[in-house]
Length: 79
Image (cartoon, rainbow, N blue to C red; front, side, top):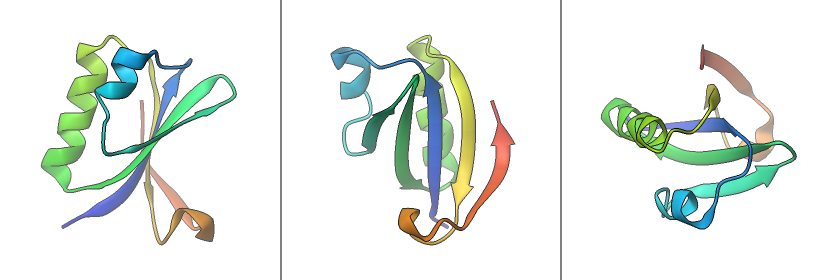
C-alpha cells in the first residue's frame, strides 16, 4: 500500500545528494531539506537507506494524509 511521506534532512543537500532522490520532490526549507514522495514500506526503507549511506542527518519522517496542501498530517516516526 502506498502512502505519502515527508522526510526532513538537516541542512541543504548538494547536487550529488539531490540526484540520489531523483523522482522525488526535494525542497530547501530554511535549515532543513524536505523530501516528499509516495512509497510502500519497502520504498520508504530504501529512501532511508540512501539517507544513511550518504551520511545525511535524518531529522524527521512524517506520514502525510491527503495532499500536502491539506495540512492533515500525522507524525508516525521521528529520526
